[in-house]
Amino acid sequence: TNDFLIAPSILSANFARLGEEVDNVLAAGADWVHFDVMDNHYVPNLTIGPMVCKALRQHGVTAPIDVHLMVKPVDRMIADFIEAGASMITFHPEASEHIDRSLQLIRQGGCQAGLVFNPATPLSYLDYVMDKIDMVLLMSVNPGFGGQAFIPGTLDKLREARQRIDASKRDIRLEIDGGVKVDNIAEIAAAGADTFVAGSAIFNAANAADPHRYDSVIERMRGALAG
Ligand code: DX5
Ligand code: ZN
Image (cartoon, rainbow, N blue to C red):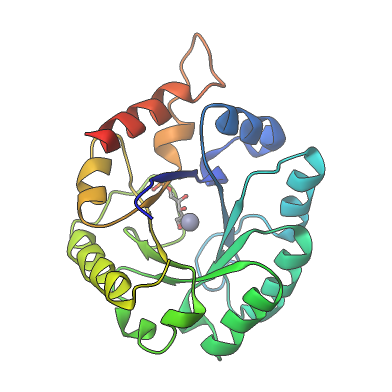
């Protein structure tokens, strides 16, 4: 897989008009919908849960919904998001009592599974699970809020994760989340990422003439990725 996917984070969308925001960002060329779930316990912020995922499906969203769980405990939310129509579910390994079981729950529910690594969480959590994951998600900010600056040390970590994935010879996506902009996306791709979450860069780019269209920033990201 060397195709690049763009996954706008709806954390930075207007929640009062969420269905329309998701429609617009998909019409603008987004590949996935990145869905940030925060519980005011694992992270110091509170967002949206399975009911909102289900509502997006009922609204007619057919694109993959990439559920990023920032919750503790994780397993009950896995069950609820499978039921709500998630396509892939990632969780933070240090938030799960039984990482292998949580991964199994996700795949048994028919979803793709992945682990998320905070900036200081070691990649050694991958040692025994490469056959049980479809995705590795590296956080390039500390989780909890949109609009933070990309932590430069993440580039070396991306290179290490890319080596682990290539060595496994498995079809595992390498996703990056936090501070991704038009200006740094090429450098992030060069370090090994193939899937790019972007929240504020996309949703804050609405212009006065056409406040709900996101084509230009997604096009500029694709242009930067194409070199
Ligand atoms: C942070 C979330 C991110 C966030 C990214 O905890 O996981 O998905 O929305 O936002 P930006 O792209 O603004 O850094
Ligand atoms: Zn996220």
